Length: 181
Image 1: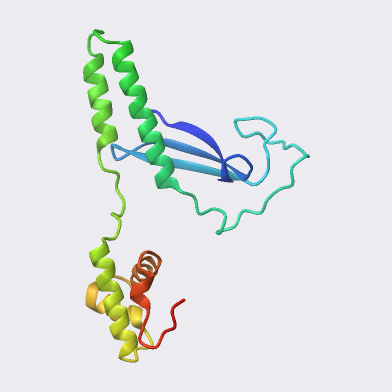
Image 2: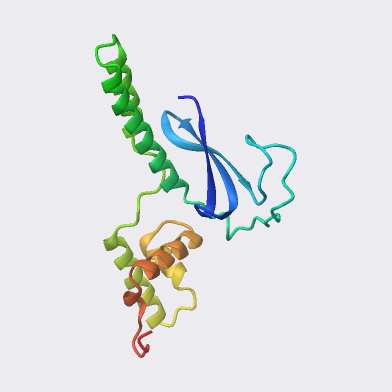
């Protein structure tokens, strides 16, 4: 599959302030985001030029404004591509070999993307329970305890599990004596 690009405004779809060109294609036979360009200024022309309009202030690109929803964009692109495949099935019905081509393309799109599966609610409950136990026991490094009990992983990854659990189940992180927030 040849890579294709989409130009988006981020984080606000209408006003940006960032412009993002996302390249979609395949990697290891799976749909993937294969390139991303991020600009804090309005290009004079597209594809990206070497000159810029003077009527828009350049925007600083920081880690905070470059947290892009690549997975969501990829899912939207895969769905759009699947819609085109369905439409082409009607348009080219009866053309020799077309149905087989569409089926191969759909199978390629249907393959599960590589990446991390979402953490299950059950697992996050275990994370919260281990964290609470570590805090109650006076541990100064509850992430290390979570890692030792639920790993093996890195302490950094254990902290990510804790953050995810806190975001999805904050009530599980209230310890005895905590005031409701």
